Length: 202
Image (tube, rainbow, N blue to C red; front, side, top):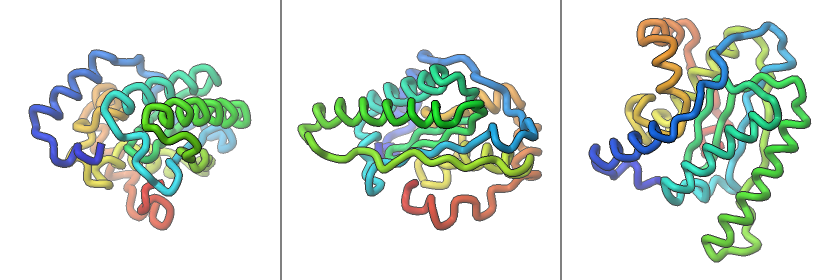
């Protein structure tokens, strides 16, 4: 998926159309509850930031679908999400964080087994871990949402949020409207969010 940068506009449009046809329901409108212990940024990263997840659009598609299904199974509300070639981010409300993390551990184990079989790499470590960061305030919540949707731009894959097929950005923009999304972007800037832990791909 690092080839995304070199793909033609026609190829990118083809992938975007395919993702739209697979469209999943909007999980939960962004909303800060004020309960700091129930809303988290969940991040999972491939081991040593290797782009194992992003070897093909099909793998990205399948993983994105399974990731969202995992949150549904754990009865966690998804407010924003993004999958990149070597990591993912999800902003979620959950009343049972240990249950969610356990389900993500099962997802990591299952995908590792499948991918290592597909790649002829039995014994390879695919995932580093899943981490969680509690939302401390409304500003933290909205800056996190902006950060997730901006991540593909930040890493140089696309120039606009809605150009990346594997995120909730297009649904978010459709539901919020461009003007409100722009207001939220200005009111809750990303600034140096992620500096020191995301630059290498986490």
